[in-house]
Image (cartoon, rainbow, N blue to C red; front, top):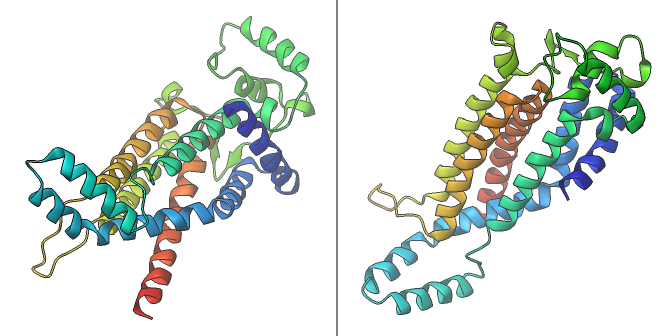
Length: 273
């Protein structure tokens, strides 16, 4: 399944690259296109978070009232979800989609010749075998990245312009500790992830009249956990993956922050009306 989506995304990324002829800009545009496609799911997820925050008070009352009766507590909790037309597993679909996107884009940037430019497997295998025989090969984990670096200038079929704002998006941070520039994009990604997590936590917590906050219900807890797990997982992969992946996640984070601000303002206006 991951390969299917990586191949599909490859067509989109290559289509954009053919117009721009710059891998970095193509990734940015690809991120925008993907975010627009995912917009309906994002709207639904944000509505679920806001709705979940609203029922926290009712959830707390049920938990206090039936804390000594687990069976009744579960029944009342399910009844509350039914009345509010919510599902305890409403965050699962979003989590599954995020994981699929994470690995699909990882596959794409790890093997751009296979998934993006659709170079014949025989050509890739030939160059891979040639590079393996070189003692100075430092890209064993990413043979197609090595091919682009070492054979791109002499063979147009495997040439992809990966220069972006002075950075080589084919670079792997964990393989080049001496170059501080390879950590700029991952560092910015961490920063935007922190901002995104703070926004998510704020949306999932409802303030009471005395200024304190209610404990989060199961849905909110699950969404909050995922909001922390995904960035940690992404950063771990970004350090050992080509910079193109970190750039995609950075742009995606920025778009997500803007999207949440706009949707939050739009939904707030709807509530006031």
